[in-house]
Image (cartoon, rainbow, N blue to C red; front, side, top):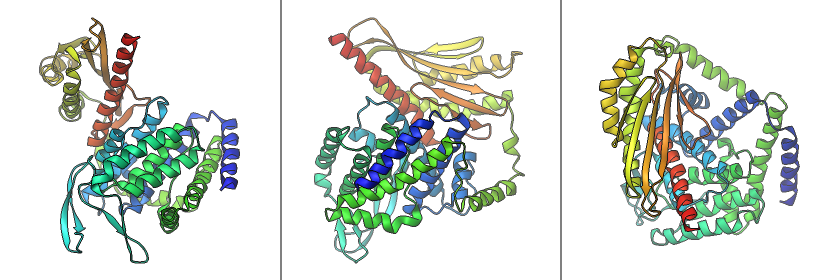
Length: 451
C-alpha cells in the first residue's frame, strides 16, 4: 500500500505545480467529476438513468425518459448532496457532526417512501423508509456466498455513530488523507446507520475528506462494482489495507485526470464519445421544446416570483423560526431598484411586496429587475448586547436568458434558464448553507463575549 500512497503523493506534488488552472479547464474538470460521481454512485445502487440522461438532467434539467420520477429526484438530490459536502470541506475549521450525516441522508432520499423488505424470519413485507433518522429495524445484506451479513443493531447505532465521529476527529490530520477517507467510508458502511442511502453517503463522506484535503474526488465506476465489493469484504475480515489500496488506486485516476486538465489537455476517455453522441441525440430530439428559448420579460419575473421565489421564501421562513429564540427581534427587507418592503415575517413581507411593490417596479423603464432578500436580528439573548446581526441574504439576478441565485455562505451561485425552477434539494441547500453560516457567526459572537 505504501507504494500507491507514494505514487499519490508524487501526483499531488505534480498537480500543485500546475495550479492554478485556467478557469475553463477547471470548469470542464469539475463538470466531468460531477457527472461521473453522480452517475456511478447512483448506478451502483440500482438507478437506471444512463450517463447521457444524467447529464441532460443535471445540466439541462431534462426529465424526459422511461424512468420513475423517484430516480430523477434522487439523482438531482444526490447532486445537491455532492455540492453540499464540497461546501462543508471548504471551511477547514468546520467539524463533521452526526447531524451533518443525517442531513445528507435527508437530502439524498428526498422524502419518506415505502420499500420492500424481509422480516428476520424471512417473510416478505413493506417498510416505511424515514429520512434523516437512524434505522429502527435491523438491516443486512446477502453476500456472494449466500450468507447473511448483519450490520449494527438499531439499539447500538447512535453510540457507534458517536464513536465514529470521535474516531474521525482524532485521526484527522494524524494519518494520510486517503487512509482517513477510505476508513471513514468503511466504518460508516459497517454500521449502516440508515434504512436506505448508506452506500451513497459513505462515498460522499469519503470525498468530503478528500475535498477537505484539497484532493479530487474518488469515483467508484459502476462497472467495477465487483472489485469494490470484494475490497469491502476483505476489510470485513480485517484486511483494511486491501480496501485502502483500492480507494487509493481510484484516486490515482482522478489525479491523473486533474493533471491533464491543468495542462489544458483533453480529459475525454474511451467511451466518452458515445456518451456525448447519446446526449446530443436527445438534445436534438427535444429541440422543438420552445421553453428553452424563453428570455427576460416582466411576465417571467412574475412567474418566478409566484413559483420559485415563493417556495424558497416559505422554506427559509420555517428555518428562521428556529433562530428566533436566540434573539429579541427579527426584521426582513425585500428590495428591488427603487422600491422595497420591510417587516418581521419573511412570508408576509414577500406577499405584500409581490402585490403592492413588484407591479410598480416592473412598470419602470429600467430593464432586468433584481430582487434581494435580507434578514437582520437584534439583541442576541446569550450575549445581551444591542448589536444587529446579519441573518443572511438571497439575491435573484435576472439576465437576458437566465437567472442566478446568490446566497450568503456559498462561494458560487445557482444558475437557471427561465423555464427552470429551483428543485426542492436546491432550496434545501440554500437554506441550510445560510443557516450553517449564521450558526458559526452566532457561536463566534458568544465566544467573543465570553473573552
